[in-house]
Image (tube, rainbow, N blue to C red; front, top):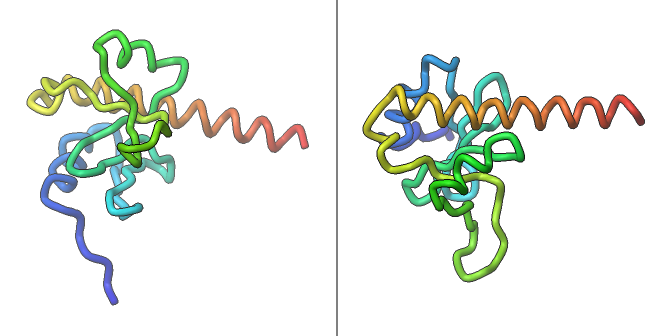
Length: 120
Protein backbone atom coordinates (compact mmCIF):
# COMPACT_ATOMS: atom_id res chain seq x y z
CA UNK A 1 0.00 0.00 0.00
CA UNK A 2 1.52 3.38 -0.97
CA UNK A 3 2.32 5.82 1.81
CA UNK A 4 -0.19 8.61 2.32
CA UNK A 5 1.10 12.09 1.55
CA UNK A 6 1.68 14.37 4.54
CA UNK A 7 -1.12 16.58 5.79
CA UNK A 8 -1.55 19.99 4.17
CA UNK A 9 -0.15 21.62 7.33
CA UNK A 10 3.00 19.47 7.23
CA UNK A 11 3.43 20.03 3.49
CA UNK A 12 3.20 23.80 4.07
CA UNK A 13 5.80 23.62 6.85
CA UNK A 14 8.15 21.67 4.57
CA UNK A 15 7.74 24.31 1.86
CA UNK A 16 8.38 27.13 4.32
CA UNK A 17 11.60 25.47 5.52
CA UNK A 18 12.81 24.42 2.04
CA UNK A 19 15.60 27.05 1.99
CA UNK A 20 17.38 24.88 4.61
CA UNK A 21 17.47 21.86 2.29
CA UNK A 22 15.28 19.00 1.13
CA UNK A 23 12.87 18.74 4.08
CA UNK A 24 11.27 15.29 4.23
CA UNK A 25 8.23 14.37 6.30
CA UNK A 26 7.88 10.84 7.65
CA UNK A 27 4.96 9.50 9.64
CA UNK A 28 5.92 8.73 13.23
CA UNK A 29 3.67 7.67 16.11
CA UNK A 30 0.59 9.47 14.82
CA UNK A 31 2.57 12.57 13.87
CA UNK A 32 5.49 13.36 11.61
CA UNK A 33 9.25 13.60 11.84
CA UNK A 34 10.84 16.28 9.64
CA UNK A 35 14.37 15.67 8.45
CA UNK A 36 17.08 17.01 6.18
CA UNK A 37 19.79 14.66 4.94
CA UNK A 38 18.42 11.93 7.21
CA UNK A 39 18.70 14.05 10.38
CA UNK A 40 15.42 14.58 12.22
CA UNK A 41 15.30 18.19 13.37
CA UNK A 42 11.58 18.66 13.99
CA UNK A 43 8.39 16.85 14.96
CA UNK A 44 4.77 17.63 14.24
CA UNK A 45 2.26 16.22 16.75
CA UNK A 46 -1.39 17.23 16.95
CA UNK A 47 -0.69 19.96 14.37
CA UNK A 48 1.97 21.51 16.60
CA UNK A 49 5.53 21.97 15.33
CA UNK A 50 8.46 21.22 17.64
CA UNK A 51 12.18 21.72 16.94
CA UNK A 52 15.04 19.62 18.31
CA UNK A 53 16.77 21.28 21.26
CA UNK A 54 20.01 20.75 23.15
CA UNK A 55 22.23 22.83 25.40
CA UNK A 56 23.11 25.03 22.40
CA UNK A 57 19.59 26.27 21.64
CA UNK A 58 17.36 25.23 24.56
CA UNK A 59 17.90 28.56 26.39
CA UNK A 60 16.25 30.41 23.46
CA UNK A 61 13.09 28.36 23.92
CA UNK A 62 13.16 28.52 27.73
CA UNK A 63 13.67 32.30 27.66
CA UNK A 64 10.26 32.60 25.98
CA UNK A 65 8.62 30.19 28.42
CA UNK A 66 8.12 27.54 25.75
CA UNK A 67 7.55 24.03 27.09
CA UNK A 68 9.09 20.79 25.75
CA UNK A 69 7.05 18.22 23.85
CA UNK A 70 5.17 15.79 26.08
CA UNK A 71 4.29 12.66 24.09
CA UNK A 72 1.79 11.66 26.78
CA UNK A 73 0.28 14.78 28.35
CA UNK A 74 -0.74 12.91 31.51
CA UNK A 75 2.86 11.72 32.15
CA UNK A 76 5.92 13.77 33.17
CA UNK A 77 8.06 12.45 30.27
CA UNK A 78 9.33 15.13 27.91
CA UNK A 79 11.41 15.03 24.74
CA UNK A 80 14.04 17.57 23.73
CA UNK A 81 11.79 19.20 21.17
CA UNK A 82 10.26 22.63 21.71
CA UNK A 83 7.69 24.64 19.76
CA UNK A 84 8.77 27.89 18.16
CA UNK A 85 6.91 31.03 19.24
CA UNK A 86 3.51 31.35 17.54
CA UNK A 87 4.73 34.41 15.64
CA UNK A 88 7.30 32.27 13.78
CA UNK A 89 4.53 30.38 12.02
CA UNK A 90 3.42 33.64 10.40
CA UNK A 91 6.89 34.77 9.32
CA UNK A 92 8.97 32.48 7.12
CA UNK A 93 12.25 34.26 7.94
CA UNK A 94 11.59 33.91 11.67
CA UNK A 95 10.57 30.27 11.23
CA UNK A 96 13.82 29.59 9.37
CA UNK A 97 15.84 30.93 12.32
CA UNK A 98 14.13 28.48 14.67
CA UNK A 99 14.33 25.64 12.15
CA UNK A 100 18.06 26.26 11.63
CA UNK A 101 18.59 26.05 15.40
CA UNK A 102 16.77 22.68 15.42
CA UNK A 103 18.83 21.41 12.49
CA UNK A 104 22.03 22.59 14.16
CA UNK A 105 21.02 20.64 17.29
CA UNK A 106 20.48 17.56 15.10
CA UNK A 107 23.93 18.05 13.55
CA UNK A 108 25.54 18.34 16.99
CA UNK A 109 23.75 15.17 18.17
CA UNK A 110 24.92 13.27 15.08
CA UNK A 111 28.52 14.45 15.55
CA UNK A 112 28.43 13.43 19.22
CA UNK A 113 27.03 10.01 18.32
CA UNK A 114 29.68 9.51 15.62
CA UNK A 115 32.49 10.48 18.01
CA UNK A 116 31.14 8.11 20.64
CA UNK A 117 30.99 5.16 18.24
CA UNK A 118 34.49 5.96 16.96
CA UNK A 119 35.89 5.59 20.48
CA UNK A 120 34.52 2.06 20.76
